[in-house]
Length: 195
Image (tube, rainbow, N blue to C red):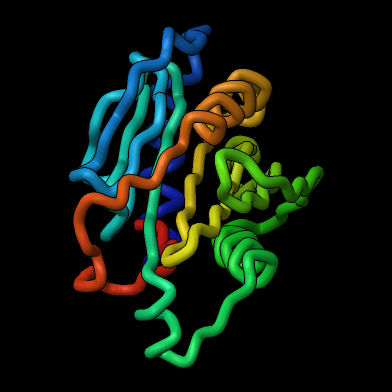
């Protein structure tokens, strides 16, 4: 049921954007409740219906670009007996995303350090069988490890817009900054679960 709801929502959003050519606009800084900051293209608008509990949800619906960011406390993960390395966490993210599709393929994985954070990224192509034709989607999955947290930055678009989405995600990753001004140990541990 959950998969079907996600497929219908994704299909509707993608079909609404199929006729527009749209690119990315200049990036602007977004700060989420002093938790983290990153530069996001101005054509993205805040949303609250893309995911059950992602604190940052944004979309450019007209052009078919979508973005989520989730943060998880390592302490809370450990309290649940989950002891992830960055590679484990990135693999968990990939596996969770793949479960929602009929077919999926990771075309590229990269691991690097940037701004004193550890990153692992994946470019994933996925498709869902539909009545008319398969719905083909591109995902750029980013797992980030900081001293006390893991972050997921998930961007997606139609497969035909993958190069623009990937370029935007690379810029978003480069601008990512964790803000340490407030404690966040009260947040619940989470995993990506599409609506």
